[in-house]
Length: 463
Image (cartoon, rainbow, N blue to C red; front, side, top):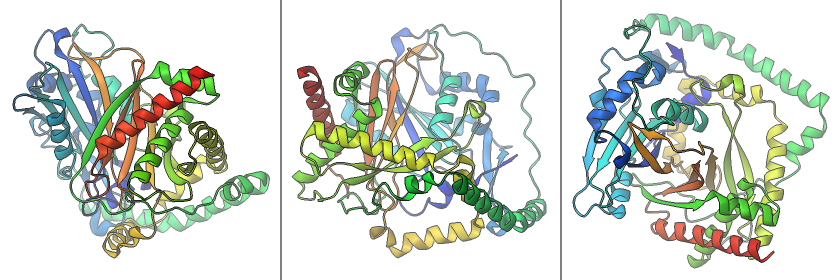
């Protein structure tokens, strides 16, 4: 049994109305390298053999009475993998457009909180013979890094299908906690919250007393004013999704030729594509957009740990500049400033502040905010942009080679566009997700990002 942190629980509290707290990944596999068909039945058998290394997949949420404390992850005594892994067949002809439509419909449904918060759809019938696997996990259980760690357990670097190391002993679900015990623990936790809050405030004061330069880094670098865009609205309960990929070698060519980092290039690609899209819709602000960029706070000792170890920085996305090279330069400066702001706060403080409030108050505030439409006025950022590193070698599921790997992330109230990418085996795989009331032509937006990449590549090659 493990209690969620305040940061983990926030993804539950923010799950209101059409905003869902799960994240997904879409893998496209070549079954020709596998000794047997890639189906729900064969995947279930493989996962069950490794389930002892993925404990979160057998745990469900248990709420604390009156929501006085964060929920707990507890073994689900009724766990049945058949509830989580299932087949989906595309009708003929099985085009990529059909696949994208199925993915958009699956991720537009919330996960069942009475069960472990994950599922896996094995999607067959693609016209090129490939098999798609859509894996969905609630963000309260994993972040990008821990999700990649779980992926490393599920998949292999060797196409041969060997028997995994068996569990040391048969799984026996732990005893379910008594509600009275959870209530008593919550009372104790709430009693010490003010003490912990005071300690964190003191730690923050002493941190800045010793490092006065960090105050300027935290408050003096960037304006926090966020302009309005068509995608800074409340999403509907429908989703639209667009994937595309670019060679990592080309991004590195831009990085080397124009003097930037890979992440700078990614941000510049997004800035250029969004500028064109906003111009086409007569909605280009005079000021740069603000991008919310997740930053992992894990160190090596926390690799493999479940839950979220991440904070968010705001960076200028220079959509107000019309020159691609000027945008790349501005992105580089903005990301450096954002990193300074992030480094100005001690990691323990970033994570610790999320545990301050009583969960009942946090959850109630989230619901009230959703009902009030205040997010139409106060928005967290214009767009979320996340770059999750992955393995640069081929990996396999039951012997089937993973050939494409697209993220399908989540939306927020007031932020109905998310751009996430995975790096894998020499490519960057972009996944754009939105709501049809915000970006109905999301495939066109993906094309605009790809065009911006080509423009930067041409500039780098011209010297």
